[in-house]
Image (cartoon, rainbow, N blue to C red; front, side, top):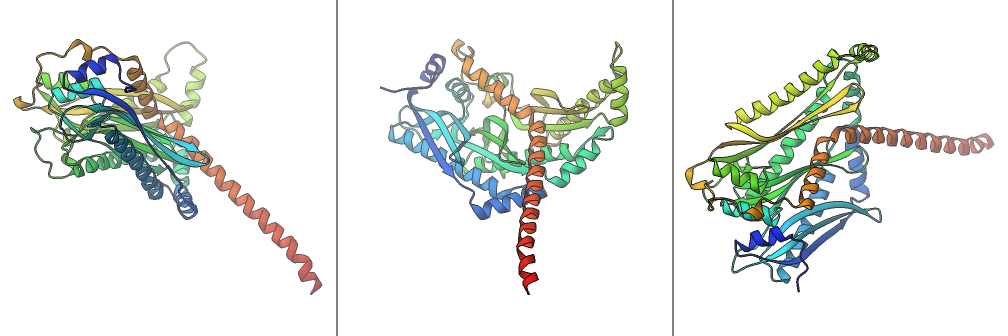
Length: 412
């Protein structure tokens, strides 16, 4: 008897492709950064930029957990794992990485793992995307005290706070490149059902994590380099519909703009807020920030030769009073050759019925993506607090040593 996490819709859809559900499978890994690594990471947190010690630690921990999950599925006789997810938690002061999924059974086939649900996998298979392996790209990054101080000063004036905007645009490019590189090493030419998360990792540190399914489509050919690996954030149903109208995904595009209202304009808006009516300063600020963010996405899509950007999500959040953040995420697409049309004439109804649990998970993921600045600023404040505490402890110890040495010197 198998205990499966699949819904009835997933089981039905996969049965159309010759798969049956297997056991829930789990893999984990508990890691420690170590004393030397911790000190090095702390220094890099103050300086700002990528914290390579933490990036590699997280990557190694996640991959170890995924490998153990896959091995458990093989022992159960499964030929693949669907619905793979990876989570990070704390256990006895250490970091635990947990990977879960559901094994699937079928005839002779190369073993695979995929982030897609049963419904998503059905849609991808019908479009010709053969799953290879669950893949990821990540980067651990710190705003740094210097960048944080400069950014705080920039908020006094009106306009874009580039210190914050550039941080998220830089790490996005790095994480995406690493996702493509890993998929290429697995022999894939596409990464589908990609999910993007911004996660806190200790004081002053964030992790940008991109996970998806490294897949192979016979019509895409062999990529000349990681930059040619197709990436898509579209759901399986969206991917199928896109192929049906003659388009294919090209690459995920994402941009962040952080804008400040400025002290002078903020004071003026405060006084006007006492009266009924529009606040033109705030209206213009948000409009400019949105337009700047969309222009960044448009320029990136044009640069890679895409025809349009689809499923674009635009989120606007107030970080603090007078400071707003705009995030735009979408998938750039282009025309597809005729041979990339789906196998089926129409999607079966079971592939269109939403599963409540799946949709809730997508909403939670989007929330994690589009609200990184509040976490970043809070983490930066924590880092500054740690530095102040360290200095205070050092001064107290220095005073204690001095007090102990004075009597000894007096006796001489």
